[in-house]
Length: 275
Ligand code: 13P
Ligand code: ZN
Image 1 (tube, rainbow, N blue to C red):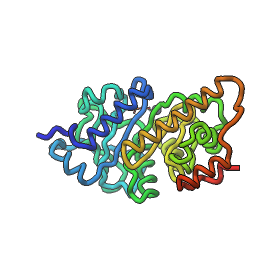
Image 2: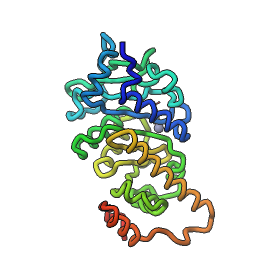
Image 3: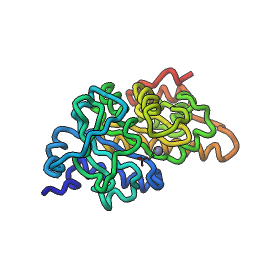
Image 4: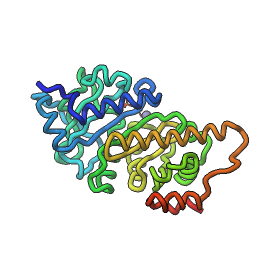
């Protein structure tokens, strides 16, 4: 029997859970992570799959372009800090049915665990990001990034009112997320409504803020997805510190500065947030 935790996809997944925990973004069972496996990932992991897969579970959402895919997912109610200690109990692999509407467990989530309660949001985000990136996107990450959450108490909840201060609070932000970030108003988590609202933002953005809750980030691999969340949260932290000085903003990166960065780094900024 292979050690599935040594397969690169599973090992990378576990490492990202550990990294998020070390950042302080995953109190208790907070946050969740999913990864859309490649055919090679599935072939390497298949020897560890259960001889009898679990039952199919309908998700309440259907995404044709994810039919037959396999995802690694964190478990609902599971703690990121425990993932590396006991992967089989805290994460698992699910297969999606031919209709793109249901999952079943083929490995892990031992002891009756199920995929994250945010699986509908992850699933719909994967569908959108897979389509708009021509299949490149494979990772969706939800974390309770402290400073991003704090800003949702003081900034207007619009894409523009979040994107501008995030771009202005760390010089390389416009290069990392030139399209900006989306903002989803407060909604009950874990359901289909918040999944739809978030996936609409993911048509345009790589990341979406959930008011009074956290952040969703997407990417082609674990490094870029974690790096995106880290960059957004770091910028939010700087802006929170600036506001906390209590003197307002004396000087910042101007729109012309932002355009100059975009020009030299070869990215196209979302003009809707300039001027
Ligand atoms: P899960 O434990 O079901 O993943 O939920 C955690 C969370 O952050 C919900 O938004
Ligand atoms: Zn959450």
